[in-house]
Image (cartoon, rainbow, N blue to C red; front, side, top):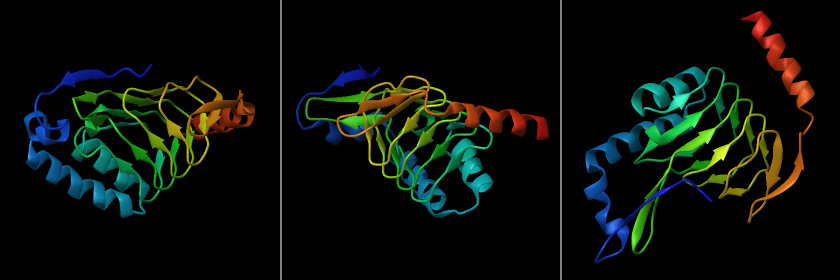
Length: 177
């Protein structure tokens, strides 16, 4: 089960209540910064935007591919650990607006995580250290550390994908720095 907080609404669908939950100016400001970061090919600049302009927690040496779309209204609810890769055109959401309610939830992506291209990550999930998410997956539940998952619906493909090589690279990188 995802860890989300539910907020019921009355009347029109929950999206019509959005500006009761977040300032429209915050949305416009974040949209501009997110669009700049989506096309920015310089990883340190992109991470600076995420950390300082959007309030995300982004670890050292984390790489966001081109066209990654982070939550425009609640990017501060997204945490990505060190040395992770977020693949091309991935969407990371920390909110969802439904008919009778909206939901908010933190997204926590661990260290040394690989997220394949065109993945969608829904609010309230945690992806454990060393996990691999196959391209095109919809992450609607927590992913265990070291797991290899994919598909829609999400399912475990295998566990403990050859992390020995990954751990070796991390240890060598730590010695260099």
